[in-house]
Length: 186
Image (cartoon, rainbow, N blue to C red; front, side, top):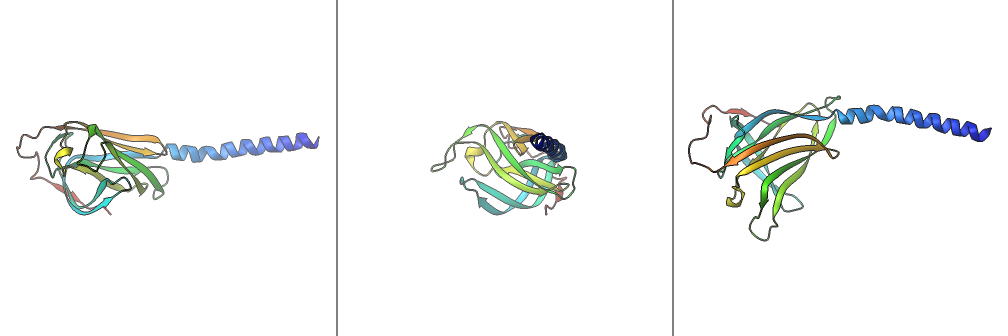
């Protein structure tokens, strides 16, 4: 009799725990990334931060969108990327996202660097805040035509993916460069 009461209590507690855990799982599943703008940008690189793998990540300021396009000329100094907003049920709640830029092929920077097929980083943002990420062509070995893909993950779940097609640079003027929309990221 005592054993059956304990068993009943354990089953009730287990059922309550499963139900209580459902809103947490649902809240996590409702985290998303909304693409707000994309295309070509110009920005000032104000700091370079190497990560543990030796990949350098740029900190930028004075960001201006110069064209809305998925087609990117392979030109040194050009930035392409997107503005995005983290979405979710609790505005202001902090979310850690994984971000990847997947290259169209494995690229080999000069030695002693190792071949790379993507670059990744972790981002910590509050739900509801808009942010910006880009890739800037700074070295000749980066000027590789093909599909470059930005991906966002949360707890291993892909939230968003956005691709750009990098093409050979014809040397012509960039579209919309005279009509830039500038913004600041806090």
